[in-house]
Image (cartoon, rainbow, N blue to C red):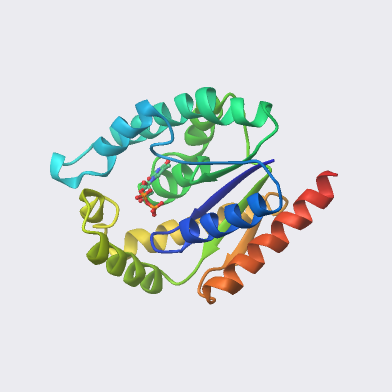
Length: 213
Ligand code: TYD
């Protein structure tokens, strides 16, 4: 089963992903955990280029192709081999990030993005996508807090520095994607306390696993 985790900055998806992974592994499940950008060696180099705002402005299409290059390599060398080995794959961001950020927020044509995503992934689509949804102000406040605590290069990354209106477009975009594919998406109320968020995810996973069995 291929599960992707999506949401705006500060939605808590990575925290929930870690907790879920722990729970599944404790139950004997083999879980391969990865993320985009940066889920493979090439991706790590691309990630540094993509997220370091100090390298100057990136043209939206240059940014897009870096994300797609990362994805193509990541699918071919990490995600597909793990799925073929029978592992559950948890991926922090995937194709829907491109649709929400480069499409809804940056304004690149959606049909074109869908074609490029299909090309980059050779038509691999998630079985389940957990969308961590919460008000933009709450997410940005959490992300700002995390950045102060961690103080990494990425903390002043390109996307964290975008205006609230940009993140609002990302959130609205995600909700439209979810409305368009209700069989794949489950919307998680990410403003709930952390344990309640993880509970919602476990229910969604169990429900999906049951449907596949
Ligand atoms: P990251 O530090 O991984 O953010 P988060 O912890 O919120 O997941 O940074 C990834 C950033 O890249 C994030 O702002 C979303 C953006 N992104 C895109 O714009 N398009 C994409 O296709 C992907 C995978 C990520």
